[in-house]
Image 1 (cartoon, rainbow over the protein chains, first blue to last red):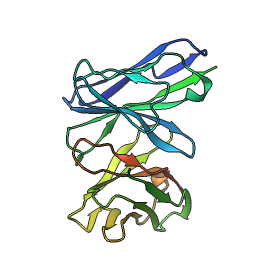
Image 2 (cartoon, chains in turn blue, orange):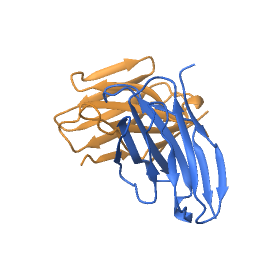
Image 3 (tube, rainbow over the protein chains, first blue to last red):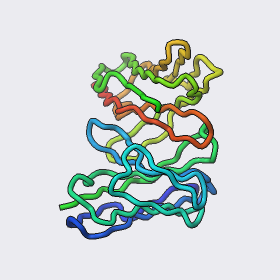
Image 4 (cartoon, each protein chain N blue to C red):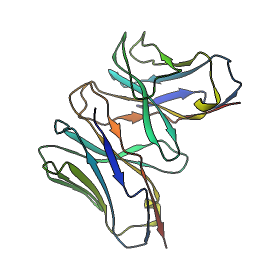
Length: 113
Length: 112
């Protein structure tokens, strides 16, 4: 089944404790991205990657890191989480061109205390 | 960069009525306009999209219209049903490999 997976789905952590949210897709998509969703603010892009070893900042990259060492995986790293990073996070992927469907993962609910 | 405005932010209709959500964008080079539906607790999913060489596209009860001159596009849902209740996001895309920019979303409530 073609899909985007994320882990963990729910995470409660404390300020400053490094964490990684994994994202994987099995559709051989070149383009992957991370969004955060907050009430009233919609979906805001954090980082995106157009292919292996190619990443770029989105609209709200501060406090986040990403890496793209393999085509299928695109982990999101929070080196020192803060409470303002409490949010719902979505990973997404699509084929390299923009004129096509973007598939979202199931989401990760992160709470930073 | 691209700026996408979506209105209204909330919309309440009676079952059977029509619902219209409108988005405006700023970059005239944008050429891809999808709409996503997000049910409560679920991920966003594509429901319909339109490309800049097309003015209107229909799929059963949903349709999207595009006015490139005015830089706006709209989602039309006819004969609304309670299961249409969700958050709807418009998005705008440009050149291949660039980001999809999303609107802030519209919460549609359909009451029976």
